[in-house]
Image 1 (cartoon, rainbow, N blue to C red):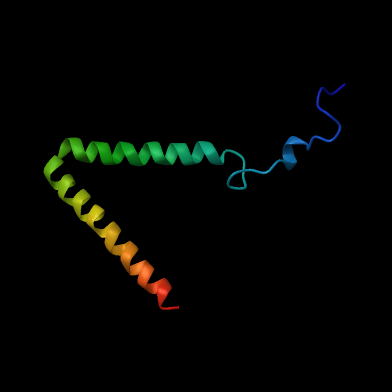
Image 2 (spheres, rainbow, N blue to C red):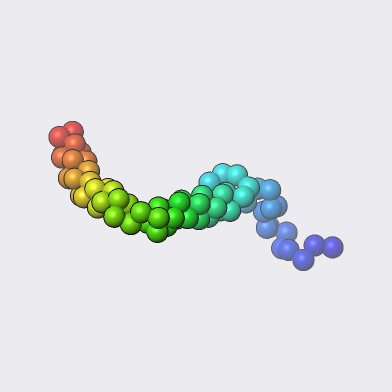
Length: 74
């Protein structure tokens, strides 16, 4: 006899975050791998990695301004 109420959805019909089983584990694994790679680069060559990080961070506001102008032109 089941302990769930009769109106409960079966586990195979429950909504998933990204639409497939194990999606959360894949996202966490990918994030951990990316942080490991970035951390390793920062430790091995901090000056070069820092310069690249600054360039990326400077590009973020530029991208947001460009995207806002693109939306306003529509």
